Image 1 (cartoon, helix red, strand yellow):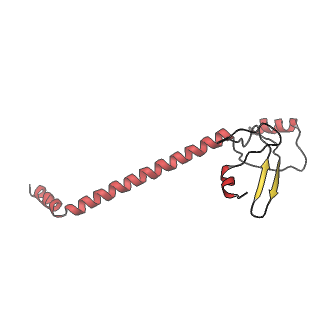
Image 2: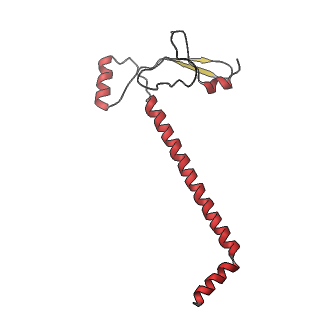
Length: 135
């Protein structure tokens, strides 16, 4: 009985400490859960983007072109996908614009706004790039 009374008296005398400790613990847990949830959502978002766009894991250049039979052999042997990618760099004073030909298997693009290209002389531009460049 004495321990029970001493416990109640200790809580009564130090109520602000116990409330503060409880609030700090609750806020710490809330912060931890929020950070974990945010990191999980970001991770899932990137995985989705990488899977839908089939983002490349490696890039290499060959001295001579690999013929279709060689590409098929490499793809089947190593369970991978290869695709020839063509691009040209256009350098200006404050930026370099890399223009790619559309790809079918690797690094597929996702249209966020506007219309897809329909002619050979059309290009798609990244909206973040457009925000930074003053024409």
